[in-house]
Length: 201
Image (cartoon, rainbow, N blue to C red; front, side, top):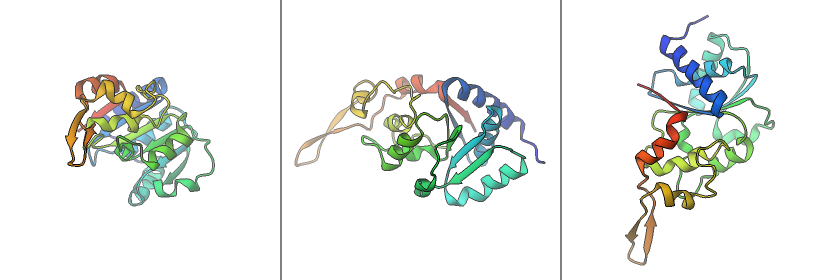
């Protein structure tokens, strides 16, 4: 059986503690640092029995190898987001969402975000990403709204959230002026989301 690296043990310890307290933890780790393995170890440490891992097809074999090589005993379902409808049961203890920034469309939520929220919003979640908000800090709202443990859960929609967390501007499109929501207030948003985040480079 293979052994985890020291930093993976440390991060999984911290992640398990955060997941148990807040029901959400975001592992924002660079490529080749072992995000998937660290997430699996976190599931073990919180005593999960059934885990759903949503990722890209090209990552399936790597995740399944880690699962076998490190001797995990919990049940795991690895699936891509396009096939999510094939998962009949909602009986999961943890949902791992790889490349979680894919949830982060704005100002309106994506179909993928709506599907996850509708089915799994009450299940503890682990987010994995190397670039959580690649385009704008305004992407945080819908990304976190997939869980009912979001620090922004009391905002019923993006626009109400944006009133507090976005520097809303106007842009002249020729035919009309439209509101632009790209300039999220970075420091204010980070203050709210930081307790959920563990980073590693």
